[in-house]
View (cartoon, rainbow, N blue to C red):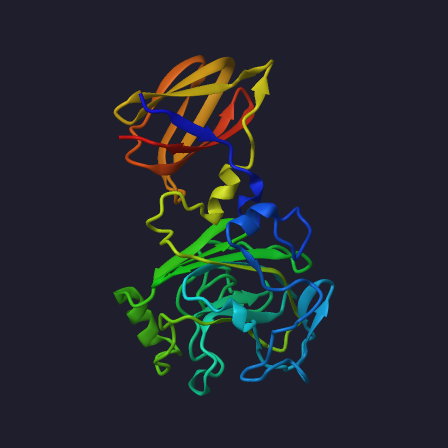
Length: 341
């Protein structure tokens, strides 16, 4: 019989789940997984204005361990050359005044033909009183692919709090996450993209959204804005294919380690064949569990009372599965990596 390996997932696996750590630092787990720190909280060395070697005369400064725009018309701020990738995931914390406006451009080409918004795409940054905010769910709302794709729900905090924004880009596929919530997903070059592109202000910019390697670009919109915890990780495997990839919106489902009661586990798991798993509840009490796939898709919801057993699955192939919920009033969460037929 093949073994089922069940491991608790540490909170520090993903940038969003590690926000209790010191700012502008990497955990050992992040460093081991290839994350790179783009800003150390002290210096803007390597950051520069458009087609210039530095930011002399620019309105961007370091303040409160953040990259800060003082509300001047200062021009864009571009990341150092060392962080130019085609396929990557990026995590950034930002806060902005309620009436403020800014943006994060990704895969930005720094050429004569690419000034301002001519490459992109742009991830919108703005406050709740900004006209662009609207109802928080428009193509100009925070977290949107600006003028193209709207976020699924409002998600930003109050103006004095930082928001964690996360983007995953692999070839033509892109996904946005805000404070651990999946906001939107799109495919560059798809029929849907082309329709939106043709109707947008980008339609005369042939390089917009082109699948190239490029820089991170912080937009100047003459509004005070703060950026910190800027982290990037180059990707060598397609997250939409890699079953072991952990998505940012899964962190809320794996926030708790399994609880032990009186020296005995609340739940034990055993593979029974044909891709099925036996769940054995060892403590009395009501329980409710949900099984999600590696992308956060809901596969199964179960509830009952213990002690007793229940069959789970079948789980097809090799994959990362997430079992979470509550048992006897205690939070329960497990990451399942199973070798299955």
